[in-house]
Image 1 (tube, rainbow, N blue to C red):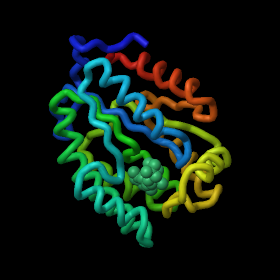
Image 2: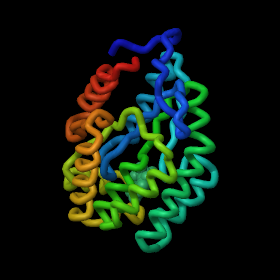
Image 3: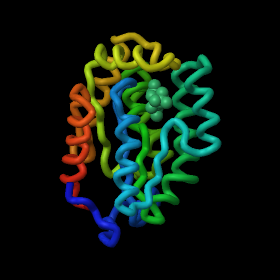
Image 4: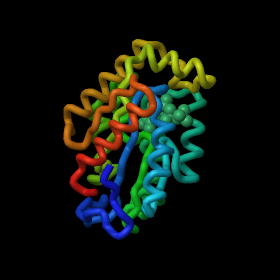
Length: 225
Ligand code: TYD
């Protein structure tokens, strides 16, 4: 990959939540549980840091001290879809204000393990929560902020379930059945249809090197390196 060098500043032009340009770049990682994004997000962090970039690796729900507390509740306490959605957006608001926006303003590359596409996929498509309400919450909370690039690790739900079973005990979402994850996958596909230029769909059923090659390709295709 033609690496963005230390002296080669990222092309400014992204907009902050208030509409001002910010020099950093915001990359989100999405996909159903078990798709393998965590391995690659760590690899990309190492790859970018080795090339001199300021990188913030973070996650949702969570990422800030308050949002991490909300994450504990969302992942482990029973609640209805509205409470779940409001907590996720409250966590997102704090995470954006205290971590993501300041990092972008100083020119960092923010790598975020999940963002709002996950809410549309899990709460919207998966749980059937009202998409119009989600759109309103997205507008209120993000005020225009969207990732510059979303890497969608796409994998058939049955294959993802096999991978999950091999590695860890399930949380509240991971215990859902195949139908749920099929809807979540469809939810991601719909989000990609609505913003095709932001998304890169990766075939996550290939081996680790194969997925990494697709990540490199997605980054190379961006005009900002
Ligand atoms: P995940 O990235 O799977 O964390 P880990 O790898 O540590 O288990 O995210 C935790 C769960 O949160 C995941 O099952 C999806 C769910 N989630 C939502 O339901 N809605 C959201 O908006 C987000 C960000 C995550």
